[in-house]
Length: 245
Image (cartoon, rainbow, N blue to C red; front, side):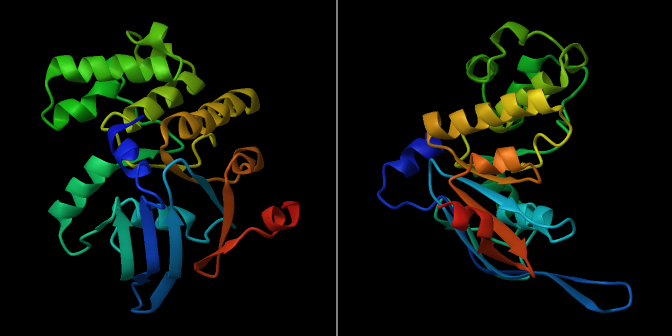
C-alpha cells in the first residue's frame, strides 16, 4: 500500500480528497465572467474509485485540475489529505500537489529518451531522493503494473497500453494519497483500454488508493464505486447508477 494512502486508510471515515462549495470562474476578453464550476461538493475516501462523467465542455477537466491543485478555485475549499490547498500560494500549492497527488492524462507524456524505469524514477529524483531509492521504487511499481520485463525499454519500444501503464506507475512514484485520471484510456483501442481499466480498479482495491477519474468510457465508469455527473457546474449522482442500485 502506498505510504500516504496507508496512513489515511487507518483512520475511520478518513477523507483523502474533499471539495466544499468549489467555484471556478474565468474572465473573458470582453470582461464577461464565465462560471465553469458553481459550487462543487465532493468527498473521496481511501480505497474508493469515483467516476466523473458529463457532456463535453461541462468543466470536468477544470474540476480535476482544481481538485489536484493544478489550478486554484475562485471560491470554496479543496482539501487533500486533510490539508487545505493554499490557493494563494503557488509554491505551497505545488509542494502539496507533488507530495500527495498523482496525475494520469489521456496522453502519457513520457520522456522519449529515457527508459520506462527512468521515467518512473524521475519524479523522485527531481524531489531529491537518492538514486538507489528511486530505482528500487521504479522497479517495484513497474512490477505492480505488469511491466517488470519492460523496465529498460524506451517509450518508442512500448505499445500504447504499455506506455500508459508506465504513466500510471510514474504517477504513483511519490506514494500519493489520491490519483486523478483524465480520460486515461481515451487514446487506446478497446481491448487495451479494458486491460487498463482492470488494472486501475485492481490498484484501488489492493493499495487503498483513492482514484477520481474523468471519463466518457461507460466501461471504466462502471468499475467505480460512485458515478457522478458534472452538470450546470455542480456534481450530481448519476441517474443511471441510481436506477441500477
